[in-house]
Image 1 (cartoon, rainbow, N blue to C red):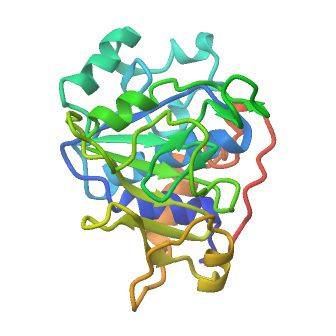
Image 2: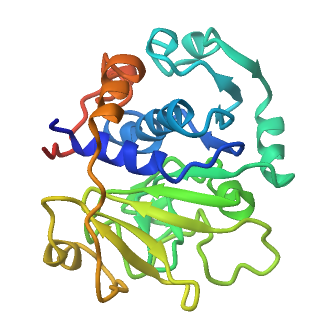
Length: 273
């Protein structure tokens, strides 16, 4: 069965979700950014619940354990629709972030304009902070993800503007100089070309798998720093028919998550079959 890039990423991410842990997804973005930061994590989370992690709990901002089947997904990510989303409970933002500080958050899903070789991320500005070329949304909950979550999963565009030698502003601390931080740091980086993890001996980003149809040459040319490359790198395991059927019939048949229909903005992620 053919699959899209978004489906490939959702299925791959779902494989790394553990039963009994909690994940956190933000809601304040749109378009292509929405697919990476919200849509793919949402589909991966529900797929994991249905396949191997029934006791995995997801939070969308202050919305705790919402119903993720297609008929319950809100029409938009604006407050009037979100507050009617069937869920276990809705809590304050302060209480939501307190869950991070208490060490209860297993996965923080993140995405940003820049990420460097050590996993430092940036969603504040491009260029000099006081006179930026681009002003971005601001740190939101990224500092809490990086400082306190047991693992952070970053979902990124793979090009030299995004995977950079040095981020212009650190909104999420990477895997270097983590003294005093209780969380585990950045565990994986999922992109449109590959999956990366981090070498525990050097804290640097390391190639873990290459997506089907992509090449090592493409990955090297589109990475703005020297990526650690093992001698043998497998291909990312393709999505199987069972996973695709669940995504297309039960989780996201209207493409609210994976085509950004929930934000009513056009999505431009490349399709891969």
